[in-house]
Length: 164
Picture 1 (cartoon, rainbow, N blue to C red):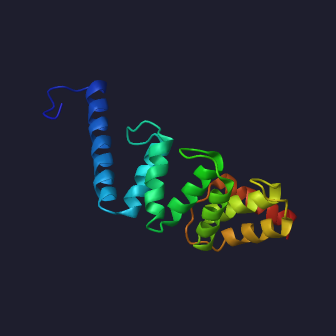
Picture 2: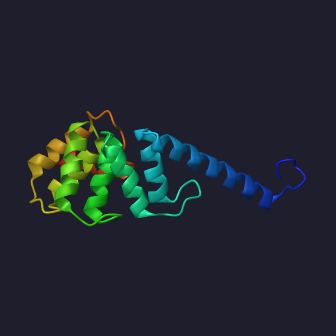
């Protein structure tokens, strides 16, 4: 395949697999060397089944947690979500909300959005608190870590139109 003697769809698939394997090896080497960003990339790769990896919530959580220990904001948000939904770890709303609060304080747009929704809808043991929901949705706009989804941004905008 490398020499070009074999080509076609099987050769292309093999090349893609080799490239993905090299990407994962690079992430892993950096992560094992203490690189929090690489840990987060591995966490998302396992969570979403990227770069040829099979989805594995336990491995995903483990890599996110290692990055949390290095104070990575996206990892804090991802771990908080994992705790809320029991993805790779036992459900703990207390731990999840604590991590999301820390991530929001450090500028995570996505964490602010989740906390806004939790307050708006009374999720994860929160009572419905429209004032706090509005505050958290407004905070989203100030965050430097822009990791929210379009759906999350649209939900926040709709809420703020109705609750100025």
